[in-house]
Image 1 (cartoon, each protein chain N blue to C red):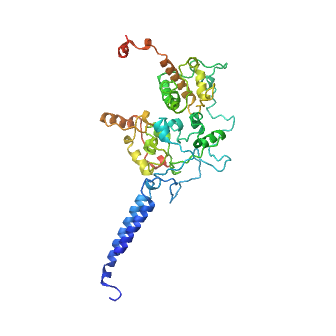
Image 2: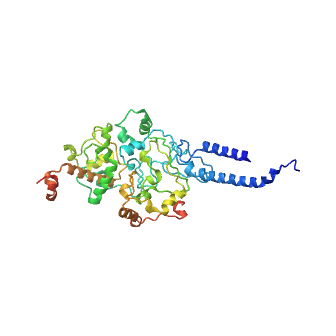
Length: 209
Length: 217
């Protein structure tokens, strides 16, 4: 009987040394002993499909297709242009510019723009340290004069002068793009600040009279 | 008969019964330990076509999760980024790195980079990313500290028990909306703050389903 226990113990040691412990790193896909209905005959987003020539389950829209409610007739809101083809100055009529829009713009700006353009829009984002040297400041003469529509167009289609900035239309819906435009305007205004902008009651804190 | 069976054989039936109990104990301990996702799935760290480091891009550079996984707030499915997302920076940074060749090829051809999915739920589970984010559940609750991972691996078991732990007690996992993608966020210890955070469950009308059809629909 002693031998039986001895060999059982050996077997346990062997099994543990082969199977390892929980949480150990493995590059092999998880073993499925009982697959049940884990893999069903349905497509999930970004999945593969052997049926289509390009191997994707996600199908691109055929050219010219417009989804319901997605006609985007409002040129001002969706293209930043007036009906006569000139850039929108200020904001489209369909939007209310309020603190809510600015807050949304700040949040979206922090996610999508700050890595390159920097937290204050001076072009000193984190990517500058890694070789993206050409990011300009929003507060230079040319960019201060840009109309809202042109900034909107840059976010939608990427930069016009050089192609350094790629389009962000897939990440920001038009309303969010306008929110970012509003926040960029706020950053530009902040860069233009003077002593006269400081409220009188806060002047002593800055050592001003 | 005493020639065939020595006297010690009298104890044998009892010894065999005891041994079977020991064997049964070992078997159930083994099944308990090994036959669950905690063993089979946790630690699954596939080799990706591009050695993308979340520790560098998110942890060190501070790029928000949503910069790449841009639909996770709107969609039930948190998308793997397009290769244009990589090229937003890598058209100017490390433009000739051989490690990035699959991304450049994908950007030029339009075919996706063959990333390998790490967190795989069974097809009979319905999971919606956007509602979890909207109700103040951070990425870290299910994905672990992605911001410290050089190579992403599965950190949590993602079993039904794991889901239910949180669905039964959302107050222990909820956090302010602006800290959703801050994976290093610590729950405050100050009781007033804790009460406020646990109050979000009421304020945001968080009612995680515990019925079968909540997730198996």
